[in-house]
Length: 366
Ligand SMILES: Nc1ncnc2c1ncn2[C@@H]1O[C@H](COP(=O)(O)OP(=O)(O)OP(=O)(O)O)[C@@H](O)[C@H]1O
Image (cartoon, rainbow, N blue to C red; front, side):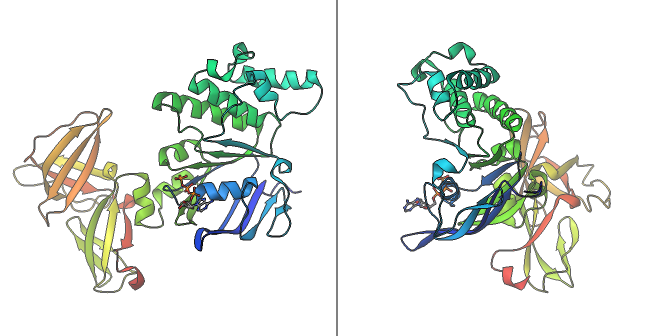
């Protein structure tokens, strides 16, 4: 096995329920020590993909390899317990009648002393050695989650499959447990495939994100790339609020309130959406009806009037109506900035942060 062999590889996995294709030709590789997040809206087929990899469900077509060895096609099938896969599912509760030590030791083989050493090592790692003889009902939700994590990791699985493992926890606790979990996973070196519908969670945990929609992976890459180079409008909108500036192509250019944009791939007369995230719009004050001078980076400034301003804690959200065509744009500004409704201001957009896509209904024209 070369160091380039993926720990997990799935090829063209398809799963159909009652005539409906729920997982549609999904291929994916996870390298040793890497955390990949399968991210997508509810019902897009993430959990089904994970269940197929775990071996608790079976694909209708496609192959699964672990360390380059086939573990399942539609004929041959290694049973789940022999795949060296650790599972941490939402509803994968601890055994209530077993102590913490017995829960963690559950999947372990070896002598009593060896098992005890591994249990103690892992419980110490997650600061729960003091609870080794407790029962699950004596632990908080966060503590139970950490026991479930080390129980899954105890037999040193090659792959950890995690399905929304933090969803039962409150926000503050969740951030802490996510970070702890990530460092334990990295130390143990397992390849991780984590299912989540929360972009923040995926960005926080993943080396690589596979964005899934309607059973298909629509984009895959490092969080930075997925966020900054989305494949389409829906992929952009999945990660944050977006603003849409619509225009019509004429002679390879699209005229907007912010000046002209090059839109060479779109035919004349077709409509395009220029997408910009709220944090990439800059604001400036009105100087007796005049705004800042154009720059290559931000293009032409456009006048707009404040409709609403809301304090959001670490930032403020200001909504503007553009003088140009009445389009509403959302802008986030760090710290407290709450201009009164009706205030005229000038907006500039970071041109390097704009994404241009064909408007809905104009996709084929591109
Ligand atoms: N055993 C099954 N029989 C029939 N339909 C199923 C079965 N399992 C899943 N489905 C359907 O397949 C679709 C995808 O489900 P899946 O649980 O994989 O989605 P998901 O992306 O993980 O969503 P969620 O985040 O809500 O769990 C859903 O519409 C679901 O109802």
